[in-house]
Length: 236
Image 1 (cartoon, rainbow, N blue to C red):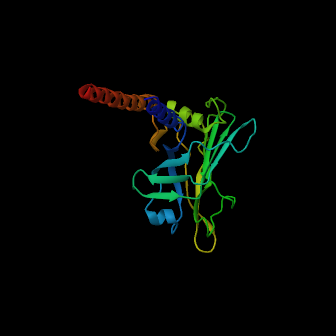
Image 2 (cartoon, rainbow, N blue to C red):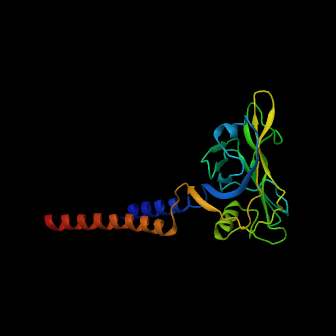
Image 3 (cartoon, rainbow, N blue to C red):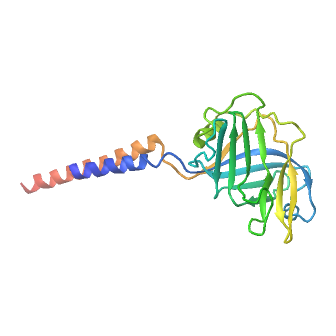
């Protein structure tokens, strides 16, 4: 009985230890397409000039701050992705090659492809976000802890981000046309009051689920004990 109960407790606390971080996807509107270059991969995919773009950022929220500076965090996930989808056309394009998330001074948030080619697409990385998708409150603190990505995610899901980027700002994409790096399209600026939603995550047990699981294991142990006692009484 003691051995079985210990096993149940080990399982319970083992599950609890995995409930801290995982792969998440955050979605938000990031503005209209302002230029669309003919022949670009985005044009071929069916994006339309002027349509609103929705971005999906997928990354591991266990990624640690790689900058280590007092003015904010930088989180580089080499497996992260950015997907852009046209809200009118339904066209979609996935940008691989990692994701960089930068949080500055508790008030600015930047998203871009993680690339060693300084924003230029290459044969090895043919499509990327070459100009960052920038969101900035311009003076109002928003992030409670800009050095911890799980907290950044929680802050973004808890309330709209009060973006105040000037209307002249555009983000850019780049693609490799076989010879050189070319801009595919520009879009933005990001709307004010950016609403982030969670589009998915690796299933992680909640506190209630963990206790429920532990209670279930303990219940099985109790049933097994009662059956053994009943069998012993019947043969006595």
